Length: 283
Image 1 (cartoon, helix red, strand yellow):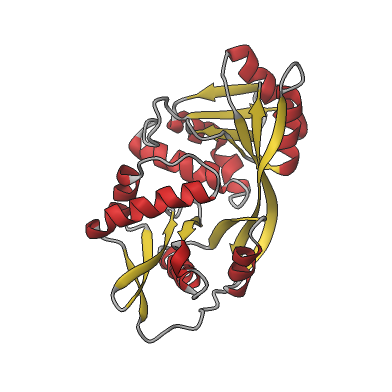
Image 2: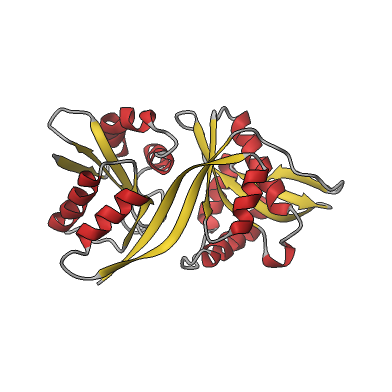
């Protein structure tokens, strides 16, 4: 039983492609990260360190039964895996000198890894609980006569970069400069805006469609404009764009601490798939 770790997204795809295709919903983050790294390289995610990929087999030559991706400074994201693989990954990181400050993934795998990682010293705590949803049937929200969707353009980059930074603060992450990341999304046509009387009032980003699935993220409305259905419009626009691009599965994550957004997405036709957890590790 062994983990293999690399910075090479092509090697990861060759080893774990069948594993990812077997459960594209629960592997959605791994799929989108690996796809982008294959197209743009391991430094595509804005960190000082390259992206890292890993896969686990129960026996030499056997099928891949677990995998993860890590795009520093973000936490590693775990794909579906047995608890024995999660514990073995913590040991692999420690023996390889790989330092991490948290992990995200399915609840059982993330907690198993955390228990192993902190067994000698330190502690772990729950940073965020999320739920993965998939779109069943898109139910369009009521629309104001002056409201309409559109894709973001280069003229919107500074505004949307500010919204990305505000969204990061809202979910407890560090505020940083998202101008480059937003520019990339705009060029790729992966940012939907909801506008009223020609003025943007909400946004919803979305990933490329890979292995038949795509994900809406992030969704944000400035605080002073909330409660008016703008996020619903932006989310519906991003969801429709993914379906037009060929997605057979349209996904999104919600923060379980936010009952408003969970209810909103269900009104749009999203249905729960699985629960996710993000954990923090401390020395």
